[in-house]
Image (tube, rainbow, N blue to C red):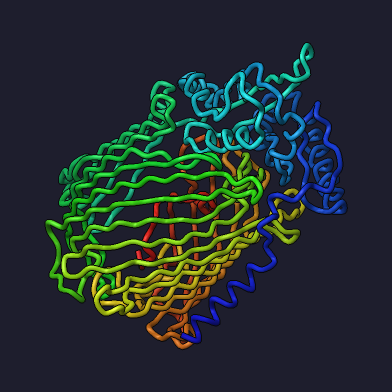
Length: 617
């Protein structure tokens, strides 16, 4: 207990420098010219001067190379191949669009014009020009329905920014930009022009899976420009090419402009079957509502970490949730209330008992959550992506979750709390938080299946080395459970999200602590729009059953790799990684080489979601 208290205290001290008012503080740059929206950095003047000087040097270099290659066809072709100018990836700035749009607050929106662009430049290579001809441009009404503001309404900068963030969350949109001008005939009215650039949304996927299974898939993320997504996956055996079945997926975002998303997935993969139906709407504004319903009927293999084996489990689950939030302007925050009902039944499963495999018990859970949150979006780049516009959230969320579970063998009360906050400082972005939850036996009052999870994330400001950009990342995770039972999800191991990149050693426990560090260098060379980023990593972690994490087995891994990404394509990031791992007694099983299609660093948000039970999932 003392060690858990020390870990929580350290995490709390790390979070003290973060002010919940970070996103609300005014910019120290005086009046903003309302005729033109400019990018303003949050760094000091010396940093801005260096940024400007480096940008000017890069500009002169680009101009010099362009002038020397313009006269002949082959050099001109090589220049277009290797050097692609882009507004975002030559600045590295961080700015608050909400603040920049403040001069237009309260003015009436007179007109909204949508200007759409093809995925690739019209004067690009023949491959890019052919891609534009084959691509069906996203329909204007599909883009317009994602806007949180309309003609005739008062201009609200926050809704404008959130509309852009929503558009960028769509796989068929790669970039957005917005310009606002005052109507010359009426200064109380404004005209808005929204610029969007499409992504190339047809992709082919493949995966080599266990037991010599292979998957080949085809995806169209923007069917006929409607924003709907269709995926088909075919499975076969690599051993004898036995047909294993198909899995079909369909997703329609913002159905009829209601901001509801409809999803369906169905099919068979050898011995696994899946049927998923989901309709959901998330919180989008400070005063808003959410609602969702999901039905699943699945037969798949579950991994039992305690026995290091997988077994077939067939389960049916019905999940219903809803929530409501109301902005409290004096607090510059929103109060929210959420509720959730979950019904689970297992048709096929391993042996269960009162104290064994509790995650596989039939159950009915009723949860409710209440809390406060504030979220503000800042605009930057080269955090999650490779150069296009990105939004990073600042703010906080505090939540209390309680409920009751009617189980197959026993009933229990559930109680949980969570807190998360984050913001930009002069040394970069710092975000952290914790969740703590436990089941309480209603007859004896005993606490069981308890868990605590602490996370801290930091990344540096964008540094400059010649024409390269460098960003440093650091992530700390501490997870511990006590009074756990036996079986599925009652122990934990290292995972892709909270683990060591190059470690392939089997280890389990109820106490895990992981420190991940990574240095990423974004290079300026962009052949055919593909961007290259080199990275090096050093990870360390402990895992075991002792309450003191430093008494458990310790591991470390280090290595380097390359990430390749084209922001105009729907494909994920191609990652090539080399690494080794070692433990207290020397070298351990390592994942020396890895080739994967991955999304690097998920976007963190502070807006509320459906109530969750803190566990080992």
